[in-house]
Length: 254
Ligand SMILES: [Zn+2]
Image (cartoon, rainbow, N blue to C red; front, side, top):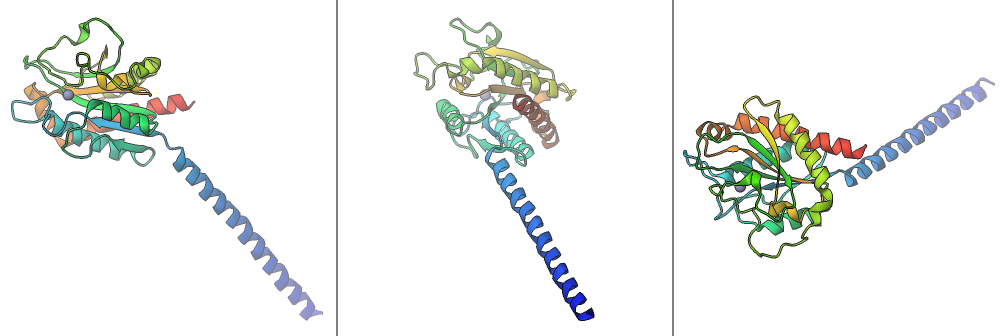
């Protein structure tokens, strides 16, 4: 009888172990499936570091080049966002990329957000501040961007055909929201004054998703150039811009 009892107990224990293994295994498989599903549906963010190669962009009096600052900052933003999002840069080193190729890359990836990074440049050394631009369709000259010195090549050029012409039009309200959310986060950086402007920028025109262009201060202002050479300041900027992008993505997911 005792032998029978203990045999029964062994069997019962075995069955228990088997059940636990099956249940736990099931949960693990489910968790893995959930994780890979999550990976598949991670929002895609394209960061576009302005200029590159022969095109250095604006230059500060200490010789800092816009193309260098934009790439450094884009890399830092990518590092901040990468755990939770798929992030792609339109250039990963110092080489030239055409404006329409930058937008095309974002469209091809079906990105959820496109953020171009630039710095300002002006003959007036006292010009300061950060500006966040969304696309504004206008047939006339842009009254908010009447600055011939900046020489920003992302401006629309003459009759050059633009890929996905007017695609951005249907995303303008969301682009403006994105600009507002990044600006709100940048207010946390006391050294900066942020403004939001609509402008007819070619690099935004063909973007088939919410898209903004951020000018992170003026390289031609000696104080801002000094900031933009400072890794700690760039890290702060990257942190605040990333938070603005995250705020926006959390809002459109609702
Ligand atoms: Zn630029």
